[in-house]
Structures are given as C-alpha cells and as structure tokens.
Length: 359
Length: 187
Image (cartoon, each protein chain N blue to C red):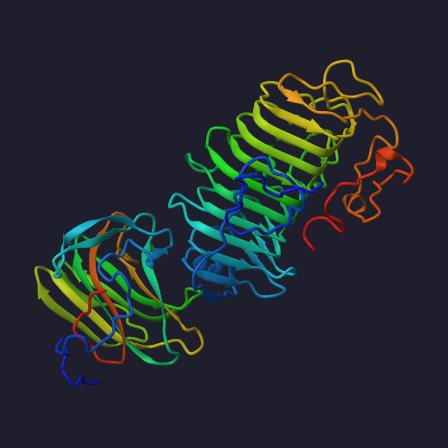
C-alpha cells in the first residue's frame, strides 16, 4: 500500500525542512517560508552586535565559533537567518517577533541558554538548536502579544533540556490567540529536573508532532493538547507521564507510546472531542476511562474512534523513562524490552538514530 | 576641502545615482528599525510635492530607522537627507556597518529650525543647505568600511540630549558614490 504524504488537496506550502515520509497528514501542512531575497552578511562578535543585527531586515547573521554571548535578544527583522555554531551559546532570553509582526526568520544550530519566547510573527523556523535553562528561567511563552499569534512555526532536530527551573513550560500557547501551523519533528523534550513541564499547546489550528519525545523525569505534564486545538496530528512519538488532550476537533494520534511513573493521573482527558482518532498506541497506563486493564483494548472517549490501543503492564520497569536514543535505533526495540516482546516493537517509526539536535 | 565640478546642488539632473530606495518614505521597506524603531507619523509637506516621514523618539536616544546599501569598500560616498525640525534638540545622521558599528556620524544640534554640528566622526564636507520652509538638506562625505560592504543609512530623530516624544520630519534621503553632492534624485 502506498501513502501520500499530503493527501488530496494538501500540497505543502513553505519550505519543508523535515521528511515526513509516509505520514498522511489529514489537513493542509503549511511549513514556514525561509528567509527570502538577498541577505546581507553580518558577522557579529558581541551580544550588542547580535542585538543590532537581529533587528534588521534581510540579513544573515553569523555567530562566531566557541563563544558565549550574554544578554537578551529580540529578533524582530524580516528575512533574518541566524547561524549559531554548535559550540557557541546565547545566554539570555531570545524572543522571535514583535508587534510589527516580522516574517521569515530562521535560527539554525548552537545553543540558547534561557527562555525562548515567540511573539507575533509569520514563518519561524528553528533547526538543530540545543535549548536549556541553567539559571532557572521559566519556560517559553509562545503567545506573548495580542491575537492573532504566530503563523507557521516549525521546530526540527532540536533538543530542549530543562535544568533547575521549577515553573513554566518549554512551550506555552494561549488558547485565545489564534495561532496557526506549529510543526515539531524530531524534537527531544528532555527536562532533567523535577518540576519542569514540557508542553501546553492550546488554541492552535494545525498542530503537527512527529518523531518527538516528551518525557519529564517525574510525574508532571509531558504534553497538554487542550482548549481549542483544531486539526492535530501526533505520531511516532513517546510521551511520558501526563498526556492530557481535550476540547479538540480533528485530532489524530498514531503510534504514540505513553508511559507513566509516579502517581500522576493527569493523563485522562478526551472531553469535548470531535472527529478524533487514536490508533496503534501502546499505553503503559490507563489513560482512557473506564474499566481497562492489561492487554485489553483501551476504551475511547466520546468523539474518538480507533483500535490497537493496548493497555500494557509489563515489559517496562515502571519507573524510568525510555531512552530516546535507544528508541530511535534501527533495531526497532524499545529500551528495556526483549526483541521477542511484541509490545517492544517500534516498527512503523519513520526515523532512526539519535534524537534531537546533533550536539 | 574638495570641490564638485558643478558646485553644491548644481549637478545636471540624472548625473548621480541615488542608492537609497523609497527615498521619501522612511516607513516602508527596505527601511527598518534601529533600537525598536520610532513613532511613525505624517510630517509637513516636503519639498518634493508629498508629505514627509515624521519620526518620534519612543523609548531612548537610539530609536531610529535605517536602510542597508551595498557599497564598495574603502570608497568615498556622500550621504544627504532633507530634514525639518519639529521639536527635537539633537538628531543623528549616521552610517553603520552590518553589526551596528559606526562608520561615519553627524550629530546635529538644533536651535529651533536651524541645524548645527555636534560630533562628526569620519564625516567631511559637512553642508547644511536651507531650501526654504524650514527644510534643510544636510550632507557629508565619508569613506566606507574597509571590510564590511553593507552601509546602513541611519537616522535618529531625537538622540542623546533629546528626550522621548521629540520629533523630526524627514524626506529626500540620498546616498551617492563620490565626495561631491549632486542634485537630489527621487527614488
């Protein structure tokens, strides 16, 4: 059987930065457009120079190798490409967009140590970034300004590490800001410290999550997809602990493995769902009420259809999150499982190799 | 001191190429912000039959607008701009490179409608031409950066000793190669 990537009438727009293989996305997939036109080169060497350049239009900014630039940066120009070497870091709050609603920004590589915010912007691409918080910042607010919020944002091949922060989310979007088209592919959300939560995604039209891993190392929320999301596709991903999803229309989960440690029961959800599907999702918990048990098909809430969603209770130690890199090995065997255990199989996942950024 | 063959303002029409795009509207691309930009309004009627761009300082002395131009390295260029004071006391007409370093600068001190020179690093042939109705064409010559080919034509309406809320009207920006000032060319 062959699959179309986009389906009838769903030709992609913008710059496709990640191969979604055989995924059939049940809605138009709108990638952000890359910076256009002739870009003047700005080889910055200080945080002040970076701050100046990031405000300009039609510019390609090169951060030097092996530096740490300390200070906040507002990227507010249109057609801005920022290249950060993998051994360099911007230590401060980085905000993309502002009230002027710039367009076509792209951050590639390197490290940001501090919160990442997204204001009003059209077409933002972030690739191969290692994001962390060393000084306890709260996470990123991706709907800073007034509505409408961002349009077309893509994250690909990135690692988000929490550290000592105790509050906040890696990405938070407000349900009332009308943001559209968020695509996340091969993103490792890997908070190291207790208390740091992952994702609270609300009010997004067309949310696409493929080949991602979101497993907080305690019992807090990994992913909340709730309050007014329209057209959601989450596939080939691992979610640890709380996976809350509710109040969504045309939401589809496929091959999402969900684990739960601790006593957190914040996994249930599924209220207010319309035209949603969940298929082939092994569940090391009982996220769907009521009355499910080991080896049985999960019950799905009203508004959700699907099959092969099996409640699991063995094959996993029950306390440690799966190793994302092992999950991504070509052997297709999940960490902690024997290859003979059918529930350990990850066949069907499109990607192999280490997760996240390459540094 | 250098001299133009035609004298100031007397070049034959079309003799010079104005490298500035949208030379009479500073609020459209490729003009962009400096330090958060400025308050944007419609200024007084300009000398070219339109209305000028009124810029107002919002948050600090570096608020401004700029336009990048690709130039030859270590080469003489002449920058000029038409200005009409509203209520500011100091403004800047600068050239920055592509990382925000000053290549050349003219700090203009205003005494009511009349401009005068404050700082003028790397600026020569500084001229203030009164063209009527409180409009001045202000110009100087500079040598472009030795290694960065991007010259950013930069204006700040209310720099340094000015305060937030002060404004200046702008029109007729021009950047031309050479050390002589030509007649303004509208783009």
